[in-house]
Length: 355
Image (cartoon, rainbow, N blue to C red; front, side, top):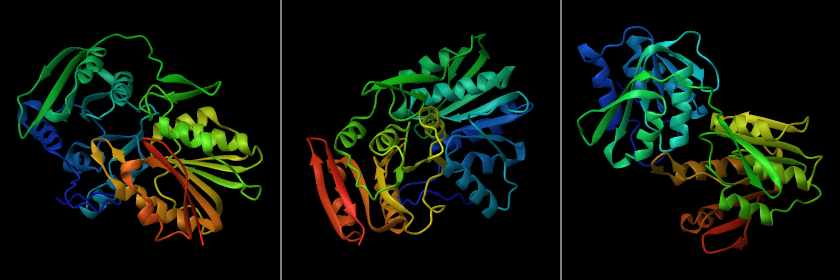
């Protein structure tokens, strides 16, 4: 079976699966572990689990738009029926009896997965979490202990392990939304949304220097998170048409908690394919370069190149990023001007102007 990555990565060393995925499949397919009843899969980034386990008719729980695209494309190229996909923020039609989870880097996101599963599973549910041993954290156990009575770890194989959970606890309803204070305002966000328990330092640095020109009225916050940059744009021009875009479902839903109005538009998607050529006056971004346990600059660089198409002539792309990423050299090959707006020991802000 051929499983490809669908994240615009150009690094040939990055695979669409790990030994943890393989261990999850081997565990499920062994005769003594075959599930009785329905199967749910969480954090299947490229559809490796869903495609290999298509015979079990799994329900795949989505938390990113690239995940949905990858599962669709990989199922198609392997001549498989596309599995049923359900957004993490929605309830399942019937309780599941078995669940596989590829452990995420974020303990908060794992908590969100387990909370969703707890509300949508039978009392006899068995949950199997796969992880690479080098990524193991005590927080995985701490979160799991909050939802299940029985926790057992497997032996390591190819530097991967499984954590098997049984006997779910009776719990009161958990609040999956928290509030972050910033500049005298309170921003709500779902657990598992970047950047955890505070407004990201790079985002705050960008907001401190962000400026708008009078003719900049169509604005895009690219990788919008909980909407704190979009809120700054709204403050600078309350009449502007503001678009917020994020690949993360939880970020997308968090942004809707914080910004609303006829001039506010939310997009749950990764790239800019739905935006017309020369349709934006300004694009602002604190672009991601960490994807789970990977560091990947190519994804951000492709977003910058897409931004060039979407910006009108004279339009601007404002970016904040860690100094070591050194995006400016590549950006200078695409944009007429690349100006340094501000920098400190950790971050740079640059403004790129389209020819």
